[in-house]
Image (cartoon, rainbow over all chains, first blue to last red; front, side, top):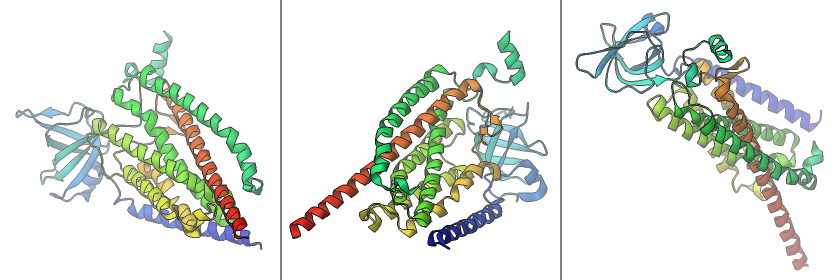
Length: 146
Length: 244
């Protein structure tokens, strides 16, 4: 066996080992590296009341209610499987809206409401020109033709 | 492959190729940048801020592509001892790091109005920051080392470092799929694009334009290292002649 073949096999074996270690590490981190918890995970008992955590989900349609003090809002965060009411006092980002993703920083209250100190809006992977917003692709194409 | 180990042969291709990569790359960037900033409409929800995508996406692609090439160069150095591998790795490191930094900076600028934060420690952002530190480590490891004085080869340590660092590339790519993250999932996959065609085409131009520019910078930096080697060799010969 030539020296360079030996080096190639050695390098590939080492690379395989490192890749394996990386995959094991990533799968072990699966739970810990999550940036937020979903409502489903919280309902399954993964949240401790009073512990700081992040909750991520969609803002349910027609759920944003402004309280009488003018700066507190209450809405429902959902992932389609479970829903958690969220209360927040402060200014939300421009992109925070119903039927859109958000991540809230805060803690669970004993009554099952999530009290947020900070709200971030999450943008999805879809990029649309303005006149096609909310339009189905097929509808948009048909509209473009007429 | 070793035919191009001869620097003269390599230069015969690299030299005429450089101005072409540079010229066509800049032209594509000019057209793509103009189209992205002026011609196409703003995005429906984000408005004008979405336009930063035409710089952010190519930067991410080159930051990650740069390290992938660096790792391949490290492998070629370790296994075949190809004399250009180390030179290529040294040439790639600085522009690769620059584009990684540009990706992080544009992402942060976009994140403030879109998400409401400059920085969050989610999987995508953290792994991209690790890539920036990996580049910094590689540059610190190779700048001014013994190999640089010996024509630009990589030490075994630097080559192994480049290979091991490559494990971060699939982690960056999958970070938004494996873990809940603030960063959105992939828009462009093998199955298609969730960026509407009306907004997508300038991105193709800027990705290609930045890539050609990257190629031109790497070739220029490689040629510089080869020129340095020649100067050093000539000085050594002169010193030997005077010594006799």
